[in-house]
Length: 493
Ligand SMILES: Nc1ncnc2c1ncn2[C@@H]1O[C@H](COP(=O)(O)OP(=O)(O)O)[C@@H](O)[C@H]1O
Ligand SMILES: [Mg+2]
Image (cartoon, rainbow, N blue to C red; front, side, top):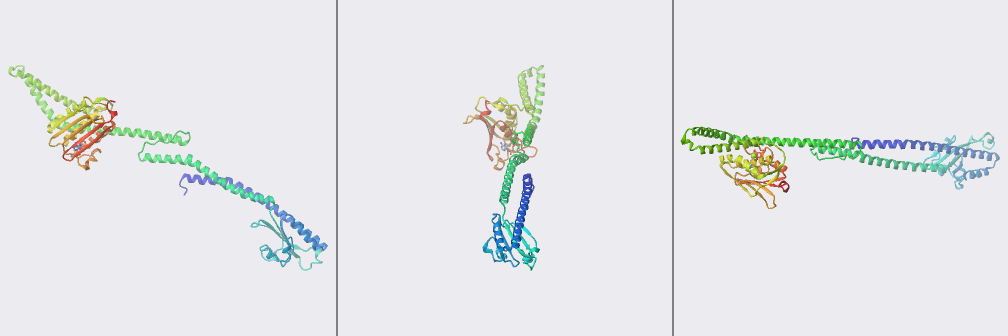
């Protein structure tokens, strides 16, 4: 029940309010009410004494009529409700209300006498809380000097005086009720004020903080808590914001590093694939050609017949040079890791990529063609990364043409004036099921050791960082086209 701080705080503050208001007020009311009670009892006592004295005097004088006068006189006081004198049988012989005369006290005032009349042996003054009337009953005992007339018993009759509250008492008791009501209202108001204060300044910031922690736990780092004040929560929120920012920075760095690693891994694999198919052949053939050409050039110096073919031998050497350029390109490609953005010509990137892949395409009996309808396509981006995109797309297209075919690379401006690059092949195509997965990391349909499943994932990431959109259209056994649309901002920026 007392699980939350909110409930604990409310119960505690309510207890403090009740104790700090209730106890002093209760003590004060009790003390004042005691004083009033004592004073009222004294007043009733005085009225009783006065009445008894009057009775004795009248009786001594044998003037019974005077008793009526005394009863009337004393009862004229507005605080006196009743004065009655009744005998042992309860028959009222004197009363300030004439109609009560001769009637039984038990009928006139039921409950006034608890058991029977003979049990009243001494003065008894008490407050009837229901009627708010002080009741006093006293036996009238005959004095020695009266015994000439009253011989029977010591107690000859009973005196009953009822008095109302005084004005001061009435005011006090009404005031007390008001005070208690106001006390309750005050406690309620204070409790509400405490609740609102707690809710606004403690509970809400605490809940916001906990919600923010929950969000961070779920991985949402785009969260900021208000920290403009100077209270403890603002300081806490400030620390929290800094912590989340650091966490965000670290995560971005990790993501970046992770992506770079994947990118590099993919490059290595692409390179591995390229070099494993080409390097062996190229190296063998070049070495053979070079040694033969060198030998023949050497021989040509002394041999007139061979000297005629010196020109051809130089052509052969030129070709070998071209071959070593290709190898050089491959090596450069593997070393490039720069992340800088700058302006460059996409046409050149396409040409470079083609240079690298042409030998492989020839070997696979694939016809590589281009359709570049712009003179130059200057875009702002990372040249190496876009080269990797083109190489990845052409490599995939080559893999999709195991028995040869056509690959067509287009670069043009679409109807919206946006630069578009597409790589189209008439290969095996992509089925519907695979279509949704090709951009996921590590998704590959190529056999073990052949594909990494990272190529298109990296291509898509590079496109995103260049604000370019990549799209794939494919039909099984007909072919596939990957289209990259560069945003307005990416080009000529
Ligand atoms: N031009 C294409 N034609 C047919 N399938 C393709 C083509 N490009 C990509 N794919 C499919 O997408 C998968 C993922 O490609 P990619 O991410 O480059 O990884 P990998 O080439 O290492 O398999 C490939 O395994 C292949 O099944
Ligand atoms: Mg690939």
